[in-house]
Image (cartoon, rainbow, N blue to C red; front, side, top):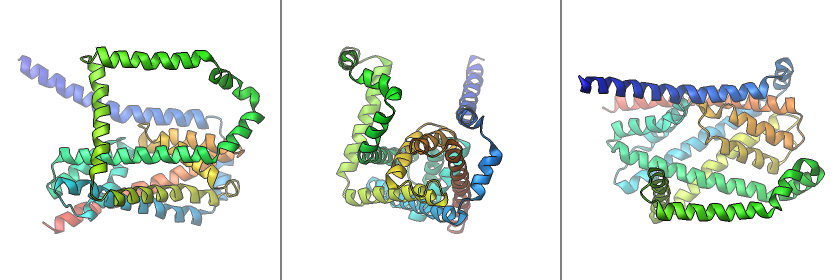
Length: 338
């Protein structure tokens, strides 16, 4: 009787976890959207969107598809050292499909594509998950590099902006010049050292150490790859496509077409960082990052909202359409090959 009760409890707990994974990200995204657009005049927003150059917006979508296609080739490089050679077309279609799944279940697409490829290509599921982790490590490194580069080439702009808005930045400048800040940093470093040195058996410490060790092993695995130069080239090509996917949309609106590539890099870097937050397709948090970036470059708030709303809607619809195509193509292709 206890065994049955435990199984029922386990099933309820599993169902609750699945519901939370779906409901909480959706709630977070909708809540952020509400905060951003609660005072927006949607008639004015629509009038701005109607004046956009939709041909340019449509052209930009091709680079998103190209980036995801190259991602399939990069994934094949990560799988080959395991001793398997899956069909690249299966990898590409599964990647397309994963983006559609992510809109329903944030991060669920990664598990889905591993399951599909594992079933058709006879590659162990666990080993595929490891390659997806490596894939995400590479993406994290690329986002960090893009962010550092974007802020570096915009350094002069931020200095001038801080000087022109001295009162706004006064608390931050006071904090940076305070000796208490640096004493707190030193104290935090020492405390971290003590915790990791003398509390090795603590559950949380073990978990963090496991994450750090796993990240380090992933980096070493990438470094030992025979085709790492091609892997690096694919990574730059993927993110170059993603940048064009975003930046070309600047030329579809008369209030962003003169901002230049440096403003585009800042907006792209900040919006890419927000994609780490588990909402449906980046809903809400992506809008917030893009709007804040455009306002920083003196774009009126309503126009910035229209840009974020229109670009996100069009790109999201594109990802879903391509994702559904990928799911269908994957199923049809493998049905005919059996």
